[in-house]
Length: 310
Image (cartoon, rainbow, N blue to C red; front, side, top):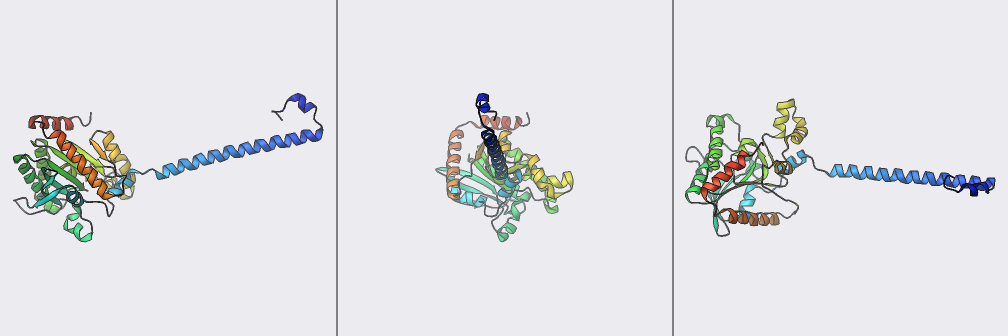
């Protein structure tokens, strides 16, 4: 009745007043229902958006997913004439680290990669992508060879970390990783590292000291696995999702921190397209850096890592 002119109300009969009041009540009820429906719809949409949003641990699971492309797939798809080289010339050959020489276009590259395997048999053979000291010493031998012949170094990283067995520690696991980091820091030829799955701890860092480091969109990079972090902090591996959120290990978080130069989108479901696009980007990167003098290259690399943490 409040929207009806007072003079009009005074002229109404009692029956007309009741009808008008009833109509006004119906309008108010209808408006109330519409408002509630709109609010419910907004709430539902908001919940759906939250439900669709991936958590940090979802990215961890995707990086570990069965059927995800491994280093061998990228090597076969990106390089031509690849020749694998074996052994560290000290103890053994470590199948968890693949090393060799291949071409991208007309340019030869030294390639290093941690390989997890794609089924149970190959994963056991590759020690689930966790290298022993021999793997890092093989990498060390090959990067020194690359420097001697002025070849760029391309690294594919996909490891939960270095193998932590007693034998590995006895044979100098920590020293082997440290030597890799030290040598790559001062290498007088371009180095590009790409994290294609898990980038875990020092096992990943040993091959991730480059002029640039890239990450695939659904890969992760962290100082420790979420499960390891949860065990240390809460003695409960079930809290791994919470640990993953705190570790800021997703490609977006790592990029925002300035630790990687590029995040490669994985929107396409076609692995061949992903490999083709990545190959073009690597070729363009090398074209832009290959004429940089070695001293300037080392200086840039030094400054890249010195700025972390500021």
